Length: 245
Image 1: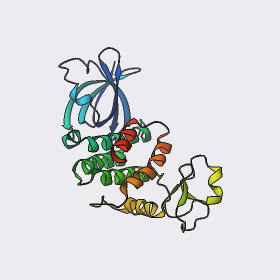
Image 2: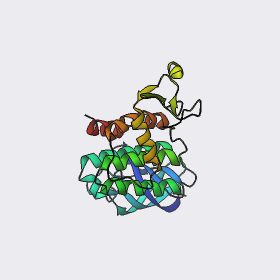
Image 3: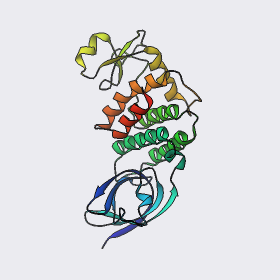
Image 4: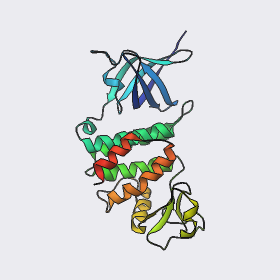
């Protein structure tokens, strides 16, 4: 007999399953990420069609079987409509959801991550500069996962960086000495002012109204996001195309 439960959850991503179903990755506060199937969600007129879209916050009624958990009902709470009417905001928000899908696991509480993601989506939806809000959100996600890069202090020597451009490596976790760069396949150079800007942005309780060199900041941050996600982030690539000419 299926075990039934209710969960407030955000749809992180979706995929097709069978002829008319959808596979969803949900982020819940109590049980972390849950991978479920919304039966018939792709059928015309399905009551689950709208709530099985990414970035929908809803109260889901779930029925857990031996192998698969199914969505039986759902009551939408928020669809973040401001994101869906602005392409730049939408791709940045989808990129953030992809990152959380890569970071979160099932079976235990992710209350802090859940609350931060909802706050971050609201910031991206309403901030006057969505890229600044997204950069702040990416950094907060890295910090809450304990993998925020060191953008001021060398990861090997523990001393403040004095060089520009500086060498950085996602594998090393931030700034590295120039002499160590050949040892890291993912090492690249970045302007010290951009690195300092990212460090300061991560320390802010909310995204500032504006930020200098934000496109360069995204370019520097992307390799770190990809490294910690351990895989491709298609929406992040779309965000790069949209925001970096």
